Length: 374
Image (cartoon, rainbow, N blue to C red; front, side, top):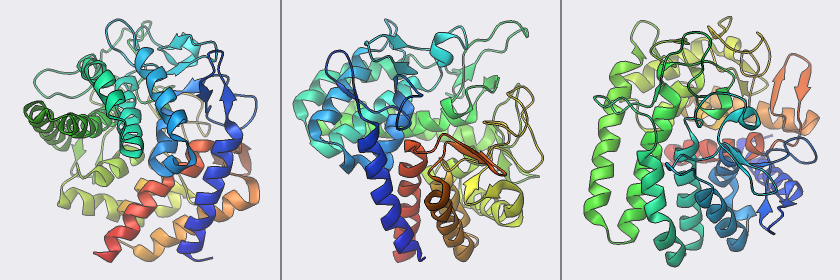
């Protein structure tokens, strides 16, 4: 299999399982839960956003605009974005159907903007954009942040209380203090919000959001970077472990500077065998587990996921293009054998036909291939 053949197959598979996942909510809105079949019984915001990243063409314009309106109107009174929306329309702000954390998850607002941005890029629906732009500004202002750095912040607890969950693909991990991944998502959403404002002719507002994006990017580079290891740390207070996913995403977004990107790519190459299984990626360096999280060698604490593979190969390509290609081919070969699973570990396979695993890597892989053409 070549990389081109792998991408073609992955595009077809992502489209197939997105269509197969479709459910109809009580109000008639088409919902696309994280996997095909019965299991995740709600419409998850971030998983849906990730399918748009890699496979937006799988959706009709009506499906896109209906889903966008759903997530925008589901924000809470303060503007916080959801974790998911039940099929009866009930918004859920904390993971675990509202059971995890005392306040809304720290990535809901960012993914709400992300969904709106992808919807606008595909549909160019100006009336929709005019309708949702003020709620999008409100939701970004609702994200808890440290004033002097602009970084997304989760208040440290006393061991009994839990302020809020971080990024949803690590929502069982008790990160506290300034948090890397949600801050990266904030930078991404700031740029996307600026583009939406520009589309409406609100240039001055767009400039302000771009400037804030640059400020937060600078804070990320200085606050989380570990020069000794050559990776970014996940948080500043609790769960300060080195973040493989976050480091790759920082390179993909262009937040990491050139020297940091090269260090991260070199780390990925040198430690490849410890962080990759069948083209799927651990959250943390080999043998490392979160300070406070779920059981080791399961789920978000040692499992291998395809979700970040696109960012990973985009970064690894800086150090070893051949190994990056192998990673893509190995991932697709794994999917062809046992399905696009939520996560794997050894012989364990969990939740095949998982939408984000098939769709999201496409964005990073395409970006990697485009870089090679330049």
